[in-house]
Amino acid sequence: MMATNFPSQLIEPGCRIVLKGREDWGLGLVQSIVGEKVTANFEDAGKQVILLSAADVSVVTPAKF
Image 1 (cartoon, rainbow, N blue to C red):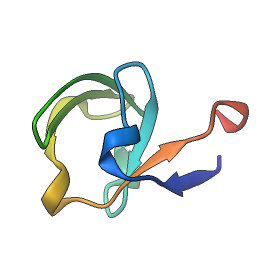
Image 2: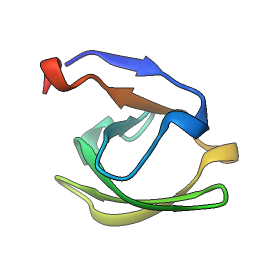
Image 3: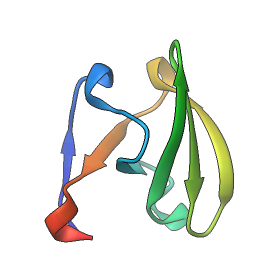
């Protein structure tokens, strides 16, 4: 799995993310973005709301799922 840090404006619904420090949650599938809040469904943690200004979120490239 290859994760790359992206500006928050490049995170969009349908992309896969990982949250640094919470890798145990697995991959998250972004459901929605409202302002700085990203709602994602994580493999091992379910639905979570993440505040982008307080989290280190990386987009996972599709070829590396």
